[in-house]
Image (cartoon, rainbow, N blue to C red; front, side, top):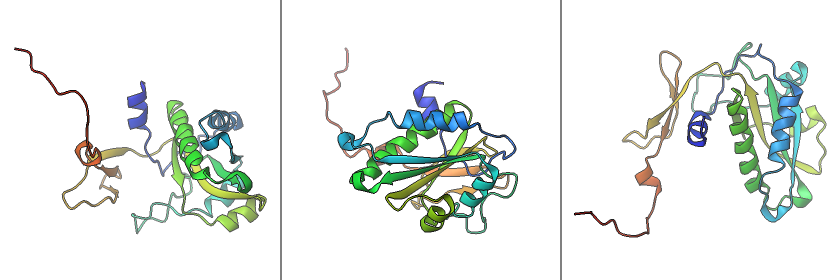
Length: 200
């Protein structure tokens, strides 16, 4: 698929085919790609913890908060949980612009994963100190995000923003996940360029 198709296909997936394992090399490849992306000031503060181990995955999963808008859904059930995780951290001494780097790195990894048929979700709602203890992450780094990864087990579609402006995603009776997006006219504040000239 081309870049536009890849971007449109890279949606947040929250249910996976847990029995479809990921290889350690797959996660190492994502981290290797991320380390070569742009970095503010070229400080390169990001550090990664990679897991495809079932026991470690269970510890990571227990520290995550899933889909805040779906009030009656506690998160993926056994059998539909992620097959792997990338915990995105930042060296505290080099972390002045780490959030910029993290956004670039996470989107790059999610796009690369989707190109390989892997779905993912970037999670920022998590118990960071619990996760630090579980994974023995040193105090010298901050835990920023967790990428949950695996073969997708749900369909995600984009919808026009409703008239009431609600940004909340929802699931329909067929369990399809719907995500409202603002239209182009709402996000482009101004356009400057040559005036269009009609050919006569």
